[in-house]
Amino acid sequence: MTTSSVSDQLAVVDERLLHAAVAAYLGRYRGETRVHTGSDLKVFLTWCADRNLDPLSLGRAEVERYVRWLQEVRRYQPSTVSRRLSVVVGFYRVCVIDQILTHSPADYVRRPPMPTDSPTLGLGHLQFEALLTTARSSANRNDFALIAMLGLLGLRIFEACGANIADLGEEHGHRVLKVRGKGDKTVLIPLPPAAARAIERAVDGRQQGPILRNLRGRRMDRHAATRRLQQLSATAGIRMPRMHPHMLRHTFVTTMLDAGVSLRDVQIAARHADPKTTMRYDRARKNLDRHPNYILAAYMASGT
Image (cartoon, rainbow, N blue to C red; front, side):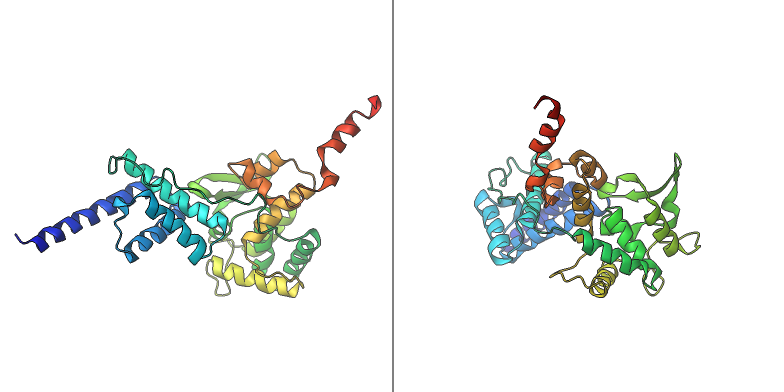
């Protein structure tokens, strides 16, 4: 057997091992989480392939180079860099668990600093009202439902687009929508009257199928939703540098905080695992008008 044929066999074995490692890692996730995790991992694997690097033979220095590439070449936001690094860290951790590797090259990689405030603040109160009014008066039955599901219910865009008429129901006297969220977790979202009316208008007497439909009568996807949102924003006179569906989820959180809803309740409503995520949305967190000192002073007014 020639040297070249031996090296070719080794390459095939390495390729199979890499595929097995990737499958084992992605097998830990389900639904949209698996799709997005796989997409982030593919970026790393493509980066390795472009440089003729074996992902299962890297050292810490190469993973550091990948992070710098994300920051300096692709110029991603710190949150994106942190998320994609977390995927790489998780991949190597599973490789160690499955005894594919003896140690993880990502263990001591420096994580990029995360800003305490979210760069996307969402719409202001008057802007959100203008958008709701424009959507309510739109001839497209789906517009008001789209804005209500994103801005009044706080759904992620894939949750709103994936919602079906069969997911509507009642629970203890409340109109509810069954939502399949991150990690394929199912939750019941109560529907305020305005949101319920918007959804009923979009359903238009249908008994099955998606709640949100595009102009062709098919299920609306994130691209069609973004186009509708941008058109509604322009009609409402809202001037934002980059209007996208997730901005309404930011609006959902910041509007509730501005209305005085407790951080814990907002965290539950937004389904954030970590309260720090909710706090990053809070654009008025540093507003002195809401400083706890004033609440304490008012509570102790009789003694002071």
